[in-house]
Image 1 (tube, rainbow over the protein chains, first blue to last red):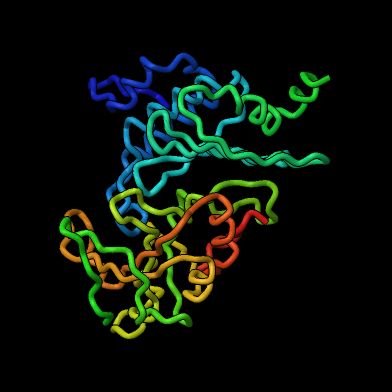
Image 2 (spheres, each protein chain N blue to C red):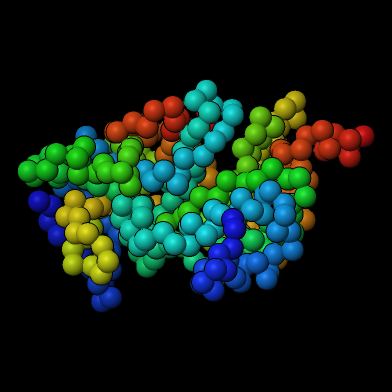
Length: 151
Length: 155
Protein backbone atom coordinates (compact mmCIF):
# COMPACT_ATOMS: atom_id res chain seq x y z
CA UNK A 1 0.00 0.00 0.00
CA UNK A 2 1.60 3.31 -1.01
CA UNK A 3 2.22 5.70 1.83
CA UNK A 4 0.73 9.11 1.18
CA UNK A 5 3.29 11.68 2.21
CA UNK A 6 1.98 14.47 0.02
CA UNK A 7 0.19 16.16 2.84
CA UNK A 8 2.07 14.52 5.71
CA UNK A 9 -1.15 12.78 6.69
CA UNK A 10 -0.01 9.17 6.85
CA UNK A 11 -2.50 7.04 8.65
CA UNK A 12 -1.25 6.24 12.09
CA UNK A 13 -1.10 2.55 11.24
CA UNK A 14 0.84 3.19 8.03
CA UNK A 15 3.36 5.35 9.86
CA UNK A 16 3.86 3.04 12.80
CA UNK A 17 3.92 -0.23 10.89
CA UNK A 18 6.28 1.11 8.24
CA UNK A 19 8.79 1.77 11.00
CA UNK A 20 7.98 -1.61 12.54
CA UNK A 21 8.08 -3.69 9.38
CA UNK A 22 11.28 -5.31 8.24
CA UNK A 23 9.90 -6.73 5.04
CA UNK A 24 8.15 -3.92 3.19
CA UNK A 25 8.87 -5.40 -0.24
CA UNK A 26 7.47 -8.86 0.40
CA UNK A 27 4.07 -9.58 -1.11
CA UNK A 28 2.71 -11.04 2.10
CA UNK A 29 3.72 -7.87 3.96
CA UNK A 30 2.11 -5.53 1.47
CA UNK A 31 -1.06 -7.63 1.40
CA UNK A 32 -1.24 -7.84 5.18
CA UNK A 33 -0.69 -4.11 5.57
CA UNK A 34 -3.54 -3.39 3.18
CA UNK A 35 -5.87 -5.74 5.02
CA UNK A 36 -4.94 -4.51 8.49
CA UNK A 37 -5.30 -0.89 7.44
CA UNK A 38 -8.83 -1.64 6.29
CA UNK A 39 -9.82 -3.75 9.29
CA UNK A 40 -8.64 -1.20 11.86
CA UNK A 41 -10.88 1.38 10.24
CA UNK A 42 -14.09 -0.62 10.19
CA UNK A 43 -17.03 1.23 11.72
CA UNK A 44 -18.55 0.08 15.01
CA UNK A 45 -21.31 -2.35 14.16
CA UNK A 46 -19.59 -3.47 10.94
CA UNK A 47 -20.97 -6.98 11.53
CA UNK A 48 -24.55 -5.73 11.63
CA UNK A 49 -24.59 -5.86 15.44
CA UNK A 50 -22.10 -4.49 17.99
CA UNK A 51 -18.64 -5.44 16.73
CA UNK A 52 -15.84 -2.85 17.09
CA UNK A 53 -13.08 -2.51 14.49
CA UNK A 54 -9.98 -4.64 14.78
CA UNK A 55 -7.91 -3.05 17.48
CA UNK A 56 -4.67 -1.33 16.62
CA UNK A 57 -2.73 -3.36 19.17
CA UNK A 58 -4.01 -6.61 17.69
CA UNK A 59 -3.17 -5.46 14.19
CA UNK A 60 0.39 -4.54 15.13
CA UNK A 61 0.84 -7.82 16.98
CA UNK A 62 -0.47 -9.69 13.95
CA UNK A 63 2.19 -8.02 11.83
CA UNK A 64 4.84 -9.04 14.35
CA UNK A 65 3.61 -12.63 14.21
CA UNK A 66 3.75 -12.63 10.43
CA UNK A 67 7.25 -11.17 10.54
CA UNK A 68 8.32 -14.09 12.70
CA UNK A 69 6.82 -16.91 10.63
CA UNK A 70 6.72 -15.81 7.00
CA UNK A 71 9.44 -16.47 4.47
CA UNK A 72 10.07 -13.94 1.71
CA UNK A 73 7.88 -15.89 -0.72
CA UNK A 74 5.20 -17.04 1.69
CA UNK A 75 1.78 -16.85 0.14
CA UNK A 76 -0.04 -13.79 1.47
CA UNK A 77 -2.58 -14.76 4.13
CA UNK A 78 -6.23 -13.81 4.25
CA UNK A 79 -7.06 -11.73 7.31
CA UNK A 80 -10.59 -11.54 8.64
CA UNK A 81 -12.02 -9.50 11.51
CA UNK A 82 -13.41 -11.00 14.70
CA UNK A 83 -16.33 -9.52 16.60
CA UNK A 84 -14.29 -8.43 19.61
CA UNK A 85 -11.55 -6.33 18.04
CA UNK A 86 -9.66 -9.54 17.35
CA UNK A 87 -8.62 -10.86 13.98
CA UNK A 88 -7.84 -14.16 12.30
CA UNK A 89 -5.01 -14.83 9.88
CA UNK A 90 -5.85 -17.66 7.52
CA UNK A 91 -4.25 -19.77 4.82
CA UNK A 92 -6.32 -22.30 2.87
CA UNK A 93 -4.70 -24.44 0.19
CA UNK A 94 -5.13 -27.88 -1.29
CA UNK A 95 -2.56 -29.05 1.26
CA UNK A 96 -4.54 -27.90 4.29
CA UNK A 97 -5.52 -24.98 6.47
CA UNK A 98 -3.90 -22.76 9.08
CA UNK A 99 -5.78 -20.24 11.19
CA UNK A 100 -4.29 -17.88 13.76
CA UNK A 101 -6.90 -16.21 15.95
CA UNK A 102 -5.18 -13.16 17.42
CA UNK A 103 -7.41 -12.60 20.46
CA UNK A 104 -5.01 -10.06 21.98
CA UNK A 105 -1.24 -9.61 22.05
CA UNK A 106 0.40 -12.82 23.26
CA UNK A 107 -2.96 -14.62 23.21
CA UNK A 108 -3.26 -16.57 19.99
CA UNK A 109 -5.22 -19.70 19.20
CA UNK A 110 -3.51 -21.49 16.34
CA UNK A 111 -5.29 -24.29 14.51
CA UNK A 112 -4.02 -26.21 11.54
CA UNK A 113 -5.06 -29.16 9.47
CA UNK A 114 -2.72 -30.88 7.06
CA UNK A 115 -4.33 -33.24 4.58
CA UNK A 116 -2.84 -36.24 2.86
CA UNK A 117 -2.02 -39.84 3.64
CA UNK A 118 -1.22 -39.03 7.27
CA UNK A 119 -3.56 -36.15 8.12
CA UNK A 120 -2.72 -33.99 11.09
CA UNK A 121 -4.95 -31.59 12.99
CA UNK A 122 -3.80 -29.62 16.01
CA UNK A 123 -4.85 -26.63 18.08
CA UNK A 124 -2.28 -24.64 20.06
CA UNK A 125 -2.42 -21.74 22.45
CA UNK A 126 0.57 -19.54 21.62
CA UNK A 127 1.92 -16.46 23.32
CA UNK A 128 5.28 -15.16 22.10
CA UNK A 129 6.89 -18.15 20.34
CA UNK A 130 5.42 -19.22 17.02
CA UNK A 131 8.08 -21.69 15.93
CA UNK A 132 5.62 -24.56 16.20
CA UNK A 133 3.55 -23.32 13.30
CA UNK A 134 6.39 -22.54 10.92
CA UNK A 135 6.55 -26.09 9.61
CA UNK A 136 2.77 -26.44 9.16
CA UNK A 137 2.75 -23.08 7.39
CA UNK A 138 5.50 -24.22 5.03
CA UNK A 139 3.73 -27.52 4.39
CA UNK A 140 0.46 -25.79 3.60
CA UNK A 141 1.81 -22.94 1.49
CA UNK A 142 5.05 -24.31 0.08
CA UNK A 143 4.67 -28.08 -0.11
CA UNK A 144 7.64 -28.56 -2.48
CA UNK A 145 9.97 -26.84 -0.03
CA UNK A 146 8.48 -28.82 2.84
CA UNK A 147 9.06 -32.07 0.95
CA UNK A 148 12.69 -31.21 0.22
CA UNK A 149 13.30 -30.25 3.83
CA UNK A 150 11.90 -33.56 4.99
CA UNK A 151 14.01 -35.61 2.58
CA UNK B 1 -42.74 -9.00 21.28
CA UNK B 2 -40.82 -11.20 23.63
CA UNK B 3 -40.71 -10.72 27.37
CA UNK B 4 -37.80 -8.41 28.16
CA UNK B 5 -34.68 -10.20 29.41
CA UNK B 6 -33.06 -9.59 32.76
CA UNK B 7 -29.99 -7.36 32.99
CA UNK B 8 -27.21 -7.18 35.53
CA UNK B 9 -26.15 -4.06 37.39
CA UNK B 10 -24.06 -2.92 34.42
CA UNK B 11 -27.05 -3.10 32.06
CA UNK B 12 -25.72 -6.24 30.39
CA UNK B 13 -28.26 -8.90 29.46
CA UNK B 14 -27.92 -12.00 31.57
CA UNK B 15 -27.41 -15.06 29.33
CA UNK B 16 -30.62 -17.03 29.19
CA UNK B 17 -32.57 -19.52 27.13
CA UNK B 18 -35.74 -17.60 26.32
CA UNK B 19 -38.77 -19.87 26.56
CA UNK B 20 -40.74 -17.73 24.12
CA UNK B 21 -38.12 -18.38 21.41
CA UNK B 22 -39.52 -21.63 20.16
CA UNK B 23 -37.60 -24.66 18.87
CA UNK B 24 -39.16 -24.29 15.44
CA UNK B 25 -38.03 -20.68 15.18
CA UNK B 26 -35.03 -19.59 13.14
CA UNK B 27 -32.30 -17.10 13.95
CA UNK B 28 -30.53 -15.13 11.24
CA UNK B 29 -26.88 -14.13 11.26
CA UNK B 30 -25.82 -11.37 8.90
CA UNK B 31 -22.65 -12.02 6.92
CA UNK B 32 -20.05 -9.35 6.30
CA UNK B 33 -18.11 -9.79 3.04
CA UNK B 34 -15.00 -9.63 5.24
CA UNK B 35 -15.83 -13.15 6.38
CA UNK B 36 -15.74 -14.67 2.91
CA UNK B 37 -12.40 -16.39 2.26
CA UNK B 38 -10.90 -18.19 -0.68
CA UNK B 39 -10.49 -21.95 -0.29
CA UNK B 40 -9.59 -24.06 -3.29
CA UNK B 41 -10.85 -27.17 -1.52
CA UNK B 42 -14.49 -26.18 -1.82
CA UNK B 43 -16.27 -26.45 -5.14
CA UNK B 44 -17.26 -22.79 -5.16
CA UNK B 45 -13.70 -21.68 -4.43
CA UNK B 46 -14.91 -19.46 -1.58
CA UNK B 47 -16.48 -20.12 1.79
CA UNK B 48 -17.30 -18.52 5.12
CA UNK B 49 -14.49 -18.08 7.63
CA UNK B 50 -14.84 -19.81 10.98
CA UNK B 51 -15.01 -16.32 12.46
CA UNK B 52 -18.61 -16.26 11.21
CA UNK B 53 -19.50 -18.34 14.28
CA UNK B 54 -17.83 -16.49 17.10
CA UNK B 55 -19.08 -14.88 20.30
CA UNK B 56 -18.24 -11.45 21.59
CA UNK B 57 -15.70 -11.28 24.42
CA UNK B 58 -17.72 -8.51 26.06
CA UNK B 59 -19.28 -9.20 29.44
CA UNK B 60 -22.05 -11.77 28.88
CA UNK B 61 -21.34 -11.63 25.15
CA UNK B 62 -22.71 -14.25 22.81
CA UNK B 63 -23.08 -14.66 19.07
CA UNK B 64 -25.39 -11.96 17.73
CA UNK B 65 -28.41 -12.93 15.64
CA UNK B 66 -31.69 -11.51 14.43
CA UNK B 67 -34.86 -13.30 15.55
CA UNK B 68 -36.81 -14.20 12.42
CA UNK B 69 -40.18 -14.92 14.03
CA UNK B 70 -40.19 -11.54 15.77
CA UNK B 71 -39.32 -9.73 12.53
CA UNK B 72 -42.14 -11.57 10.78
CA UNK B 73 -44.59 -10.50 13.50
CA UNK B 74 -43.66 -6.88 12.89
CA UNK B 75 -44.24 -4.74 9.83
CA UNK B 76 -40.71 -5.36 8.55
CA UNK B 77 -39.81 -7.65 5.69
CA UNK B 78 -37.13 -10.00 7.09
CA UNK B 79 -35.01 -10.08 3.94
CA UNK B 80 -35.03 -6.29 3.68
CA UNK B 81 -34.34 -5.91 7.40
CA UNK B 82 -31.13 -7.93 7.44
CA UNK B 83 -29.86 -7.22 3.93
CA UNK B 84 -27.96 -4.20 2.67
CA UNK B 85 -24.78 -3.51 0.67
CA UNK B 86 -22.86 -3.86 3.93
CA UNK B 87 -24.49 -7.22 4.67
CA UNK B 88 -25.33 -8.67 1.28
CA UNK B 89 -26.02 -12.15 2.55
CA UNK B 90 -27.04 -14.01 5.68
CA UNK B 91 -27.43 -17.46 7.15
CA UNK B 92 -30.09 -18.98 9.38
CA UNK B 93 -29.98 -21.60 12.09
CA UNK B 94 -32.86 -23.52 13.63
CA UNK B 95 -33.25 -22.85 17.33
CA UNK B 96 -33.88 -26.54 17.98
CA UNK B 97 -30.56 -27.42 16.36
CA UNK B 98 -28.74 -24.79 18.38
CA UNK B 99 -30.19 -26.10 21.62
CA UNK B 100 -29.36 -29.65 20.67
CA UNK B 101 -25.74 -28.50 20.37
CA UNK B 102 -25.94 -27.11 23.90
CA UNK B 103 -26.49 -23.43 23.15
CA UNK B 104 -28.87 -21.01 24.81
CA UNK B 105 -30.87 -18.71 22.56
CA UNK B 106 -32.03 -15.47 24.09
CA UNK B 107 -33.36 -12.00 23.50
CA UNK B 108 -31.22 -8.86 23.70
CA UNK B 109 -32.75 -5.88 21.91
CA UNK B 110 -30.34 -3.13 20.87
CA UNK B 111 -32.01 0.11 21.86
CA UNK B 112 -30.48 3.55 22.35
CA UNK B 113 -26.90 2.29 22.29
CA UNK B 114 -24.23 4.74 21.18
CA UNK B 115 -23.15 4.47 17.54
CA UNK B 116 -25.56 1.63 16.85
CA UNK B 117 -28.87 1.46 15.00
CA UNK B 118 -31.72 0.20 17.10
CA UNK B 119 -32.51 -3.46 16.54
CA UNK B 120 -35.51 -4.63 18.55
CA UNK B 121 -35.13 -8.11 17.04
CA UNK B 122 -31.58 -8.71 18.22
CA UNK B 123 -30.88 -11.97 19.98
CA UNK B 124 -27.85 -13.81 21.21
CA UNK B 125 -26.61 -17.36 21.19
CA UNK B 126 -24.57 -18.32 24.23
CA UNK B 127 -22.31 -21.32 24.63
CA UNK B 128 -18.94 -22.65 23.61
CA UNK B 129 -17.42 -21.59 20.30
CA UNK B 130 -14.55 -24.04 20.22
CA UNK B 131 -13.22 -25.17 16.87
CA UNK B 132 -15.32 -28.38 16.82
CA UNK B 133 -18.39 -26.37 17.79
CA UNK B 134 -17.77 -23.84 15.05
CA UNK B 135 -17.67 -26.71 12.58
CA UNK B 136 -20.93 -28.04 13.98
CA UNK B 137 -22.54 -24.60 13.72
CA UNK B 138 -21.49 -24.29 10.10
CA UNK B 139 -23.16 -27.60 9.36
CA UNK B 140 -26.51 -26.56 10.83
CA UNK B 141 -26.42 -23.22 8.99
CA UNK B 142 -28.38 -22.60 5.81
CA UNK B 143 -28.49 -19.62 3.53
CA UNK B 144 -31.19 -17.10 4.33
CA UNK B 145 -30.00 -14.67 1.68
CA UNK B 146 -27.50 -16.56 -0.39
CA UNK B 147 -24.19 -15.23 -1.66
CA UNK B 148 -23.58 -16.80 -5.06
CA UNK B 149 -20.57 -19.08 -5.38
CA UNK B 150 -19.83 -19.15 -1.67
CA UNK B 151 -20.01 -22.30 0.43
CA UNK B 152 -21.15 -22.12 4.05
CA UNK B 153 -19.02 -25.06 5.11
CA UNK B 154 -15.49 -26.12 4.38
CA UNK B 155 -16.79 -29.39 3.02
